[in-house]
Structures are given as structure tokens and as C-alpha cells.
Image (cartoon, rainbow, N blue to C red; front, side, top):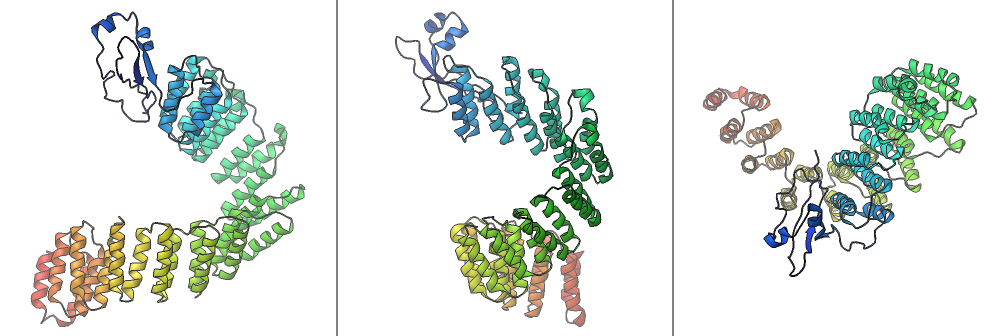
Length: 558
């Protein structure tokens, strides 16, 4: 639980004056109170004997504010601005507390409480919120429901539905009437956290228990809950009952039902619901079209999805970021790189920023079709459009360049990426693997050194690639040295590590070194089945000449 602490520091006891300075940090995000003594400089006996009360003692100190300059005249509106601008959450709490406790004549109001609670809620720091709400309740300050809606929404986002429910139930304790707005926010928080049954139960009892009359948004939320738990039939019943409750279903209502059918893979009924929207004279928005398109794509009906997108554009409905993502992903899955690239170009022209996963799909399909140059052109286009490629995109392109034997183009691309970003272990590994595969071990070693120098810790894959590289050029003993370093660094080898090295030693005729490798394997956790099987398969053809080695290893295995 977050704690609220007060730190008092006395500065210099000025002669012929009772004014001493103290610094406060009343609200703290730290887990424990400070161990600092309240007064660093002991007060004289004469000074204490002259103080008649605790209040007089506190007034005899000048409080040091948490930030400087501190305004001489402070009003709630100005404090709201100070808290809003403050990026350090701990300081924001201290500013709030200092103003209420130590600024002459200042009193908090609803706006100051709402501002600090809103800031904490968005940061998912809920401990101090409970303390502030307790203070607010005792202060008799008139509150608004908006404050609780903020807290409810953020409890939902933070996966704390129980706290959201508890907060909703105590709203009345603050002299605030609960309305359908806070009720809808609670239902959304519950559905976000898969509490569908509880949401349904609250809906059925909202009039009786809370004197809240549901509206069309409430019904839409309930329909969403029912569809998410695959109960589209009950969702349809709620839809049919809405007119009887004085509510007219809207596009969102039907889109949610449509989404329920799409989740089931029932595209016939989904299409029928889409037709009902059109029959009512409504124009489905980008979201409705996208859900239908996504359903067709998941069923492998790409032509139907394309038809929906064409109809959408004919009706003047602009595709959004999600629409592009769905269609580009579907084209990539069907290995249609040209169509995927065209849509990605449209997306960039409309200033949408494609996410990393989407870019990787397009680059991957381009390279699979042999269009590595096209993938490199896409990289440059992303840079020109201020879409800085991340490690996933870079690694994908480097992998394909290396696979096509273009290791120096891959190295150049790595250098361009390195100038603006910090390569990850994955990016380093991909290029090191490519260099080792082509026998460029000196370059691989340079990348290794660069990797370590920048604090990027090599993993088992990195070591395996180097071992494999040395075995490939006929120098498996150097691979053994890499294995020794690997074990020395505390990096645990995997099954592939020993198999790569054993095979490399056999192929180079250095069978006597296999005992050493297997002893190392045994001392670091045992010989895995794969490595043991590889050894047996290699020795089975010449048991007589290798009987001594086999006996040693059998003893080792035992």
C-alpha cells in the first residue's frame, strides 16, 4: 500500500528569531516512511519552554515548498495548472499536499482533488487515490460524478474490476447521485475484464438496486458482453426488447451483433445483419465494414472482403488504420505482395503509421517472392515517411538479405539502423548468423565485440551461431573455446549447442575432442538425448576402432 509520509527538516536556528525552515514531502510514492529524524538541529530548552501549543510550534517554522519558485498568491485554478504540468508524479503529490497544509489561506476544492486523482488514475497509481478519496469525503467538498467515472474507467484498464465495483457502490457516500453514466462505465470495466455474468446481473437489477434507468449505450454494452461470451441469441433478444424499453437500436448495436456472428465464423448471418443496417437507411461506418471484412478474411474469402472494401470506398467511407491492417495482413497471408504493397502505400499517403508487425508481414512476403530489392525500397520509404523501423522490421530484412547472400547489404542496413536506434539481441543475432553462414567469422567477431560493448548480452543462439561458423570452416576446436566461454559466462547451452559441435568434430576428424565436449556437457547439466543419439549414429559404423571411446562415454552417461 502506498504510504503518505511527512518529512520535517530544521535548517538554521536564527538568533533572536523563532522562525525555522522545514521541508515537506507529505505525499510520497515510496513504500516506506523516511527514517530521517524530524528535527536535525535540536531546539534549545528555552525555545521549547516558550511554546504554548503544538500549533504555535508548527507556525514558528517556515515551510520549504517542494518546488521553486513557489507562488506567493495561490488559487485553486493555478494549483490545477501546476499539477497538470508536473511530469514527476511524486512531486505533483507533494505540490498538492504542500498547498493544502502550508500555504496561508489556501483551501483545496473539487477541481484540485479531481486533477490530482485524474493524474494518479491515468498513471495506474491507486494507493494514494484511496487516501485522497477518504480526505475528500471528510472535507464535505461537493463532488461531481465525473471524478468517479475517471477512477472507474482506469480501474477497468488496470484489470481491477473488483475495485471498480467497490468504487461504484460507494459513490453515494460522497453525496453524489449515481447516474447511467457511471453505471455504463462500470459495465465497460467489467466486460474489459471478462466479467460477463456479473455485468449481465447488474444490468437486470439496475432499476431495482440502483434506481438507474438504462439507456441505449447500456444495452449496447450488455449486447457486447453477451456476444463476447458467444451468446448471440441472448444478444438478439436484448436487441428485440430495446424498443419496448423506449430505446431505438443504433449502428453500434447492429455492428456489435454483426461482430458476434463474425466471431462464430457465421458470415451468412453477419452479412444479413449488415444488410439490415443498410435497409434502415443507415450508412455503416469504417468499423462496421472492417469487422465484416475481417470475418471474410479469416474464412479465406478474400474476394468477398475486397468487394466490401470497394463498396465502402464507393459509399464515401474512408478506410481507417485497422481496415488497412486487416486487408494488408490478408493479402500477405495469400502471398499477394503487390496488393499488400499498394495498400501500404495508400496507408502512408494518408499519414497512417503502420505498426511493426504489419511492416514485417509485407517485407516477409516480398522477400519470399524474391523481391528483396522491393523490401529494401519499402525500408527507405518508411524512413522518408518518418516511420522509424524497429528491431523486428530490421531483423526481418537483414535475415532475408543474408539468406539471399547479400550480407554486405545487410551490414550496411544494420549500420543505418544503428545510427538512429539501439539494435536488440535479435538484430545482432540475425546478422551474426548471416556472417557465420557465409564464413565471414572476422566480421561476426567484430559484431560480437560491438554487441558486448553496448551492453547487449549474447544468448545461446549467438554462441551457437559462432560455434557453427567455426565448425563450418573446419575449425571446431575454436568452437570448443566458444563453448568454454559460454559456460564461463553462465549462459546455458541448449540441445543444438552440443549437437552442432559434436557433428563439427566428427566431420573434421577430431573425434578425440568429443570426449572433452561430452564431459563439459555432463558437468553443466547432463548429455541430452539428441547429442547422445548423434554420437551413437556416428560411431555405429565403426564400433571396433571406437570401442575405447564408446566405453568412456558410456561410463560418462551412467
